[in-house]
Length: 288
Ligand SMILES: O=C(O)CCC(=O)C(=O)O
Ligand SMILES: [Fe+2]
Figure 1 (cartoon, protein in one colour):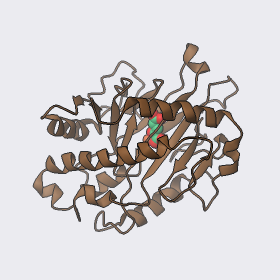
Figure 2 (figure 1 turned 135 degrees about the vertical axis):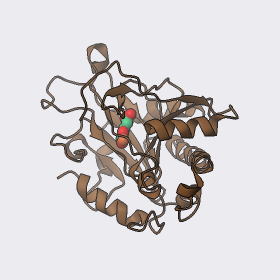
Figure 3 (figure 1 turned 90 degrees about the vertical axis):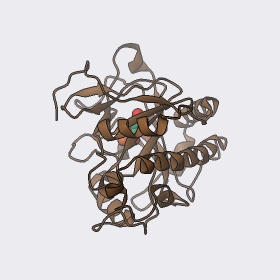
């Protein structure tokens, strides 16, 4: 892992959804840094903020425990005590979250806003995958078993994770962080800028840099499955969420990554289908 240099530039480019050059500029940013940022996109910010506010209330209450996930139950609520241990890490992340699948449980205590967000973000994700495909060299895209956007159509595995990082109490285990360095497993991740800072990526030169996340923009990053399907042309980029200091430490951070997972039967490469790839990776990261 690289030296911690918080002054490093991420190199991530923010594009306006309305710019005709957006598909090309965005895809170049993904290729160079593993991340891209989209402004002026069609997902209403009011909807994102409604989800943040309602779910903060949900996480603050007790009702969440009725939706507990289990070893063979990947929808529902994951408390901090069963939270993920990033691959190669020893401490649990300081976070709790709820996994929303199209087929899964959904709390009665919140409105359908997160479901509406899921649908809007999935539709936009299909468009973003088409941007990426259109700007991928033909010798690379020739290896895709089908158009990237088709891989996620109707997928039961695309997952919206509503994440809450609680305020820090000072009682945390030494070395535990909000989200330890990791890569995402899926094709792409679509993430509205959080209400609080903290998201960082590891640059090609091995330095940590803040991901530009102006409130209202969408952050998109490459996951392992796109790396696998593109034969390494796109790189799944390591990222993390650092602990805040000062006043920020007393505030919760909410975030809403949509992990675009192909249908399980989709062929990713000669070695893997999306299903076999996901199984292998989940075995590595499930809380031990
Ligand atoms: O909360 C964030 O900003 C990022 C979360 C993340 O990287 C993840 O859940 O995989
Ligand atoms: Fe991630």
